[in-house]
Image 1 (spheres, one colour):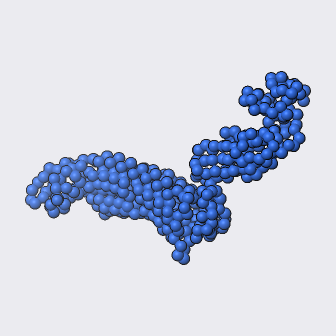
Image 2 (cartoon, rainbow, N blue to C red):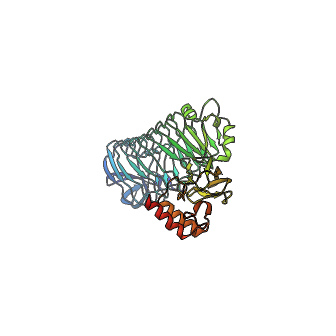
Image 3 (cartoon, rainbow, N blue to C red):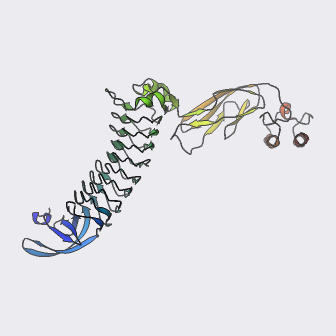
Length: 429
């Protein structure tokens, strides 16, 4: 344990006050100067000085490992700080109300940022939190209204009030290591969208309260609880995607988690198999428009034999971004489907076409009728052109042609002669 004499040892070097923190006098932190620092400050990795303790003189060479609590608090003329690579901790209120601070580069050895460490640093525009940081105190960047760019590493598990009142933030990427969000973005009036990582199970009270520009949010499948007024006063929030199969519990005592306008005018997207559960769960059932994560442009079709149609899937915002939809037909002898959703009516009857993606499935019922075929319209689009030549060649190569539809030259067979006949037909107009 450090002796009382060691703990109390302070000294100045290069205009900066330091405090010895260990008994052998090898480590020091920047001590408080009560608003006395200004301009551009460079903190070295090591400091050498002579100190007195118990009436004895000591030559000290100490590694700078931290910024003491309130060390730079109220230094309103401080414009930039260069921190050493040896720094491990930034204390509570360390840079509180450094309103002129525009730039600070955090060291790679940093592990801890104290509560309100950068509160009211209104000129700070960007911050990159190093990958070694695993603890960020409450309201660490409280009311940093000029902050527009933030990088958070995959070592941070909780963000508690961290960006309260950061009105300049318009978007932010949250790390997959996060478990809890609690009051994190209250009053961030510039934030337009948010994707909550798959690791988060709890969203605390007023986490996004007052984010008046917020338009869309994606909630993870792991989410189990939404606390009081989590998205309250987010009047422009009109798209909520919740990937959880089981509706997350909501705080439901005399206060709503979402704004009235979100419930009435917004769209809620949930797993298709869970729609009934959301519709019958308190507070979630206040949403007037609940949709599946994936839908098709048509759910029922009637096609003449030989005709084609393109089915187009619509995905909820934030669901399976960049993933590829897979397609299948319940009866390919009646209706076929390509990898991009193009269906073709082959024979009289009916079949279901299914689109699948990450556990979600949407279906379209297709009824095939006889109709009246157009000579030469091989692809079934109602016109005769170059595309029909390509389609006929594909059918011949695949052996899936139908003589009653694809025998262009009328000889009772389908082959290369029909391709030539089709070309002649097109050229003749």
